[in-house]
Image (cartoon, rainbow, N blue to C red; front, top):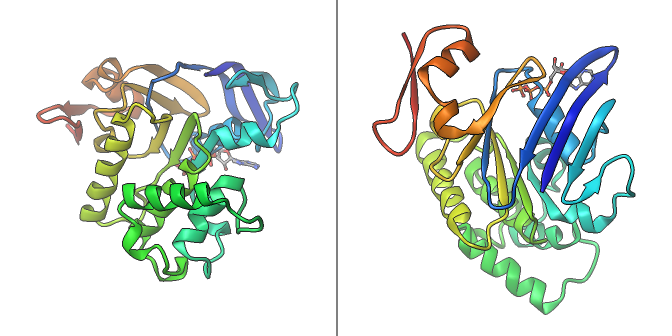
Length: 257
Ligand SMILES: Nc1ncnc2c1ncn2[C@@H]1O[C@H](COP(=O)(O)OP(=O)(O)OP(=O)(O)O)[C@@H](O)[C@H]1O
């Protein structure tokens, strides 16, 4: 469903991404880890066709970016929750309006939703645990509540790929754990889109993330099954310091030795 071949991106005379090869198959869920400035956001922007590769091929859901015209239809098939989307949301819109707007892949609601869309928005608000504040304005929601609403919004168009870019930023421990639990149960559903979950934190790699990509200085350091990636040796090389990964429970944790 996603294929990047030898993809490089240059911005302002600097290579931000270099020779990226990455394949995602249907049904896989990926975690993406990288230090600040590794190029994670640039890579995600490429998957959403906000950036086009300077070199190489990006194939998303059978469409070759830069070659095929990118219809609205394809844009709707890639859902994204990121801080840049958050910043563009109209703060006075209600959670319900925001979720409905996902059906049109628009920021703000300009078209009349069908009854079916309304029912679906309500169902998604319930599934994300957001129904109780459906009529409240975005401005009044906590950061955790906002993220849930934005995930429900992204799901409105039945995306085949869902990108979650650091969704736990700014969340307290409890809100973070509750959000992670919702993401895990979403991923366990048969109807779930493939998820790409971007984070700085190894301990957020949920059991559903069967694959992990490590991005370092614009290059794929490794991209493989999570069990082969989150090891003492790979992560010590990745961070450049000795670290130990503990898998005592279902999620990993990391300590510096
Ligand atoms: N439009 C742009 N023009 C010039 N440089 C850019 C542009 N976008 C990103 N960069 C640079 O590319 C590098 C990678 O940035 P990017 O935001 O993708 O990193 P990131 O992995 O998402 O980092 P963080 O974890 O801090 O969000 C950074 O050095 C950044 O300054």
